Image (cartoon, rainbow, N blue to C red; front, side, top):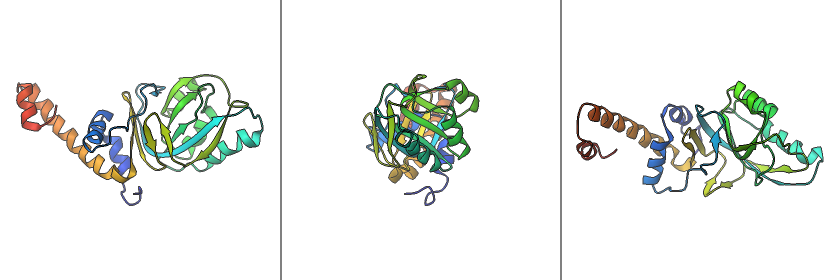
Length: 221
């Protein structure tokens, strides 16, 4: 499936109020390992990230050769397209894998955010840009002599979640989840229905209906 084949998925996801509804739908559809490790959190609690995964795979290195360290990363930034979310499995727990210039470049090229199973730096500048970044930690440590990008737009695994290029990403204060392309249209449609149903449940509860009766009437709580 592609965003061209199913237009509007990103925009519809952006209108959903919380990841919880989408996570429930994924569970009901048999996709039980779609939420990234809870340590990956937004630099700003109010930020929401939604878009299509531009996946990044990296590894530790002792090299300080610019051709090894910078060129692959800059090639990746040059491939950023509108609605992309940079989703990085650096396989590293020391260096920062995104900083101010990288963020500004990605934002200029239309990226909607970044999700990193690793570190970020220049976070004050990133926050000023208003660019949603979800990361495991913050550090000023640079990648030179420590880390390199191996490939991008390849399948990666973060925690127990398998992520393919173009999968849909949704993250908020509760965390980040991944929606496989093959089921994205169904997931979004079902999640929209759930949100409407939960609004009816909420209205009924606030009008005095017993919670058990509300659950039995609407099938959700």
